Amino acid sequence: MKIVSVQQCLEAEKADLSGSSFHDVNLSGSRFDDVNLSGASFENINMSGWRVHNVNLSGLRIEKANLAGASISGANLNGMTIDGVSVAELLAFWRAGHAPSAATE
Image (cartoon, rainbow, N blue to C red):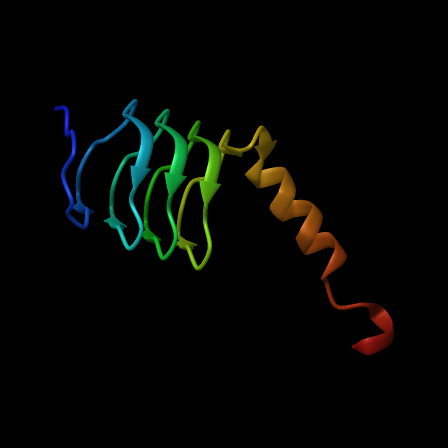
């Protein structure tokens, strides 16, 4: 499916969008529930205000995107990258630095 020059809010539920490519698109406010986005590619995308829940994002590649206010929960992040950085590694690094210390327990 190819969509060109359309102004709509994208809502996807129980869909397989694996391997899809999105380039120079405003997807702000989009909602994805129970969707397979594995291997998809997003470049030069406005993803602000995204609501992503229970989604397979393994192998997803995001480059040059606006993710302000985006919310991702219950997602498989294995192999997902944002501007070439592994999201799983980034989260592990952040969580390690924000774990409660023994002194504050």
